[in-house]
Length: 554
Image (cartoon, rainbow, N blue to C red; front, side, top):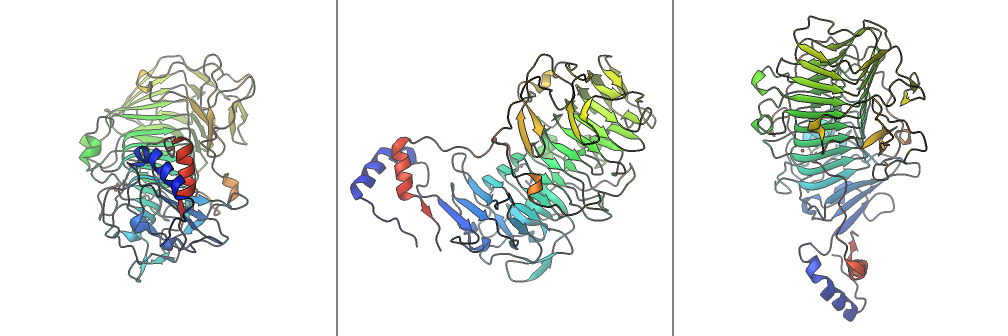
């Protein structure tokens, strides 16, 4: 048992008296737990996961060998005092590695679906089951949650991960932030299930998600999510594991925003489909509007499906399909396929896409770029599109409305297209060529930022009429990267070698989606700008914190 050493009773009493009203709603003694070399705790399992309280912080320090441990987080923080699980990087920015291979589960925990993830959020017997809330996970390299890897469960038995296991598996949660992590070498890199609408308000920010999937299968993806309100921003999505045919970002959410990301490879870059059998998603008022903007979407040659974005549904239950509008604006889409590329597959005639202010470029030349697969209604405005584009490479049953405000050409004027510098050079035809944003995007989805290679962001400059695509060219020095979005660089940790996904046909098998706990797929949902700051408590609070805040020393 740790005690607070007396340092002057009169001073402590005075400080307590001056701050009692502010401190009353909160536990006064939040705890910092430090794990790693030369730290009070030698293993992650020594953290009392079963009893974390609001404001507690777990710091996992980098070490040269992985932490082969797995656990569940099933506790609630508050908006003012979230529960933080944070990696402390090494001297060269290396993230602490949490490996599912041969991982050991603490005997103090007891939870189901342990074969589904390395780090699990929600769904436990010990600690008692509840809806986790106000959780932040950041700066960890989480990997190796897939067959043939095995682990030791909480009863000491040996088990093997399921095909659809994830590095981070969210069964249910609200107000959840996952940021600054590397997520790889798993079945699904990130899995979040809506769990009958319990999963809400999720932010996925500044992560490197790559090298996931199961060989020869379409059913596992770099990320696979369903929630009520989820935002992806400033993430770097790379190719899946070699021979794996899943999608890069697959989602079944209501209230979906995908903005300012770099997404490269996968069967499709974006697979935005129906909420399947969960009425909480299908009946949600935000289900009919999806916002995708400010992204870089890269299609390598031979990388699975020739379609960049799928919007609508894949369950076969047409009444559950999105039947709304995909707002797709200010994206830079680059395909280096030698064959055909299709921008959009809209599942039925009830799906609509508003496509404006984008750069849509293929290197294959004229005749190789199509706008639609077949169905749906597409509105085009103020885009730069490679010359010679066609309506469809198949039979067009849908409708394309082109307001003739766009441009066509051979080259959009990138700084260095072959080198993947897709910012605009001086003289680019895309400069000052964009139009207005869709009214539905305002005010919540204004174009305020742009992606910084890799996994960071910066305010988007405002200089005259806006440029087309994901990047605004600056005539002077651009603003520096936003300090709140500044994770360790991708180069800090060498990735697992990956040859990219194998080619697969356009007509892929449809996969089951995130459902309820105990089924083949389950999960959770958060939207937050970051870790909330505690209220200012003036000098008295600061002094009291110095006297009373305790570190966990076991």
